[in-house]
Image 1 (cartoon, helix red, strand yellow):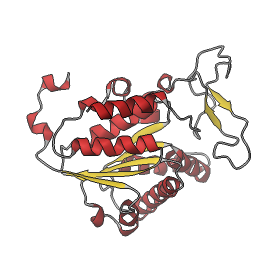
Image 2 (tube, rainbow, N blue to C red):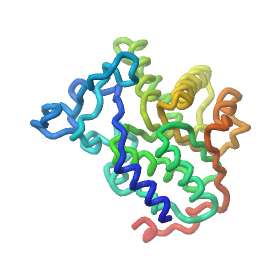
Image 3 (cartoon, rainbow, N blue to C red):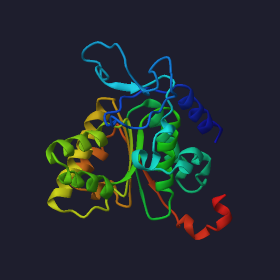
Length: 260
């Protein structure tokens, strides 16, 4: 694991600032009061040429810390998970380390897709959450979410005063995140609405990845060839990485001491 730890260290010491497109006006600040860069707001606008991906957008203050923000609502992780989840927690079994290396390589590159699939208990969810925790500690905006929860968040926009605008805002939030880890991709009740939203979400993430703008890590129990046609075609893009995880469920050997 020495090589993996080296890559993680490089990721931490070479963070990338990223635009956040869903910052509420009264959101808690990720920076300290009186900061010389942002005055305590937590966000700054850089002087960039027209056409730059971050032109006109708010970016994290150089002194900002994403872990100051409400974690569960923004990132899908608890405070404990964000601080304590590390790659060393992944058990050295089966293809787990191959999956870790694939995720780390994509995080280090800064764009692309990784698709993890296999039976239950292979550690897929743990790896997705670690990827998000590591990205946040490296000052990148990231989130962990289940596919059904992401679609439901879009459906809930219909309760807003302006449903159309709110739905687009939420869609932009999910599609604009620099790092997004989507769990249980294949566990979605396929109504017409859900299918359409799943397509919009993943197609936009795909377009951003091939433009070298974002990272998406997907986890599923389904072989990529058996996914819906549009999604299978994108996952099987040879520029991306697919890792199959096999073996008995790791949960069969768990006890309370394992969690320490």
